Structure formats: C-alpha cells, structure tokens
Length: 441
Image 1 (cartoon, rainbow, N blue to C red):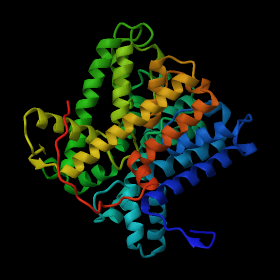
Image 2: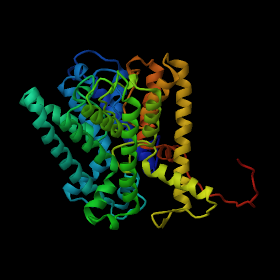
Image 3: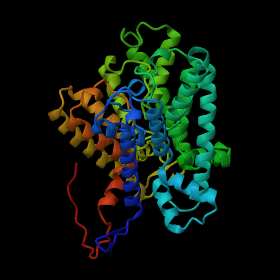
Image 4: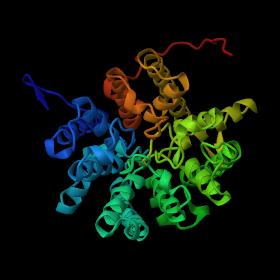
C-alpha cells in the first residue's frame, strides 16, 4: 500500500482488520441498492445489517424477511459465508484452485485469521474448512427441505432451507421470519437440524479436522477434547437450568406440553452461546435465566470456529488457573498436559480486555438509550459475543447506540487482541528492571 510516496507495510493483524472493514463497507453499499430492499433504509441501518452479517451476529434493526428482497437476502447470505469462513480462507481457496504457490506471508495471515498457534498444516486446515463447511451446509439444507417443502412449497422450501442452513452453520442467527424459530418450538426436525449445524460450526474447524484425522477420542488433541467435553457440560447444564427455572413461566415454557418444554429448553440452551436463533421470547424470561444467557454469550464458542465470545477454551484455562492458585500450585495442568504461562496470560488478557470493552459500551448505552440496565447489558454482550439474541431493543436503538453495537460486533469478531495488535507495534523492552513485590488481594 502506498500513501504520499511512502510504502505502508501492514502486519497480518492489520491486513485482516482492514480487509474485514472494507468487506463490511462493500456489503453496506450493496444493501443500499434500490433493488436490494422493499423499502428505503438509512445508510446506518445498511451498515448495521452488513456488520451484523459479516460478523455472523444476527442482530437486526430491520426485519430481514420483509425489508430485503431476494437479492438483498442473498447479499446477507454472502456476507455471512464470508464472515463465518473467513475472507482470507476464500483467498487461499482461489490460490489453491488456480494452482498458485502460497507464500510464507499468506500462510502467516491465515494463521492469524484461524487463530492457530503454528504455521504447520494451515493450508491443509483451509482445505478441510471448505470441505466440511460446504458438505455440512448441503446436508443441513437437504434435511430442512424435507420438512419445509411440504409446508411452503418447492421454491420457498428450498430457499428457506438454503438460507437457514448457511445462517445456522455460521452461527449467524439471521432468519427469514421475524419471530426466528418460535413457530417451530416443538418441531424435532427443525430443532435437531438447526442446532446440529450451529453446534458443529461452533466447535471450530481445528476440532473437526482433528476428529476426522484421529477418529479416536484418546488420540485427540487437548484442545479438541476440552471443546467436546466443555460443550457437552455447558449445553446439558444450561438445558437443565432453563427447564427448571422457566418450567412454570406462562410466557415461555409454562403453556407448552412436556415434550415441547424439553425441546425448547434444549434449543434455547445450546443456541445461547453463539447461534442467535430463539424459539422462546427472550424478554419474557426470568431474570436469572437472562443472566445465565449473558454468561454463556460471553463465553461463546471455540477458537477457529464460526462463533464469537472469549472462547470456551479461554474460560477453561482461566478456571483451571484459579483452581491451581487455590491449591497453591505453581504449575497448571489439564488432562495430563501442562499449560504454558503464555497461554494463561493470553487468556487473562482476552478476558479482561473483553470485560473492559463491555463495561465501557454498557456505560455509554445506559446514557444514550431508554432501556433497562439488564436489557442494555444483554444487548452489549450479545453483540460482543456475535450471538444475535436480543430482548427486543435492537430496533429502538438511537443512532449512537447503533454505532456502539456495530463497534462491539466488529471487535467481537476480529478479537480484542487482534485489534490491539493492529493499533500498536509490539516491542521488546530494552531494559530489564529488578523485581519488587506489590500487595494484591
């Protein structure tokens, strides 16, 4: 890149951020085209929608099905696919198809984009990424079409299946219907297929590749085992909590049959971490349920996945670090493997930066918006975790409120550390100073 006769060298983090930013702006211009919408929308709403799609969040200031034409909806699907699988991954795919040599710089960029710890196998991971993604999305589309073609007809049934399969696998949460999945609250096919898609997408491509290669739980990497076990525990625990707390709530589970209560508890528990679909009215839930959802949204999905949040493995590392401290242990081990200090510091940095960002955003939103503190906190965490669930306040946000949510979605997708590396130049200290104790706690 040249500017005023000078060459500007971008590091991988900066290149990722700027590419992501320009893709969002491109999506905004496409969504503002007259034939992309059934009614005129503002530039800010177009930017909000493009950001929400590109960051695979799903928050919407306008109704997706009513406001956008088929062309506009296809632009949203394209942005979801680009954001979920990664722009750089598509660039590498083009290089692979054309038989071009992939140099070290491009490999480093992919390493940053997929949040990998080493360069080894990143190109192979990209190949797996596209094979798994397109195959799983196709399977999801076919299964949903068996359910929706009889109800909506061939054309609409196939289109709805196509749209929601891509949206679900990429953990986007966008839906053609304004009530999301509430009309299918007790539908086994829709609940199973949609949840299967976003759970698989949320595990991460590294996990999927590892499972495909090893095909034995004992041989799996520590990261993969933590993701599988952690996901299972969180999902089952959340489902049990939802079922117990909301069982008698007449606005959520109370009026449903016992079977439908189980389906609704399951779907709402597993979708909360990143997917953004809802089969129940979020605003009508008990405050303790909403608070649990905020925690789950903050944790999010897995690294190198289509989901957001601080990531499940980050939360696990911090939890084991606390346990080790309470036991007065200097070393931290998980599954008979030691965790390095660098990983622990990285996990703490990601978590603290995320908390500070959310606190700052909630403070501003509490000043600019008319919603309650809980509604504001829920919206902010949902945006940062790229989840897309809302207590019904997204459409009533002020212009400044929309800008804050846009920034939260953007930072939540690219990652706070990536953004920090974009704005600063890491430097090694030239002078080392003597140690001295500081009182803490």
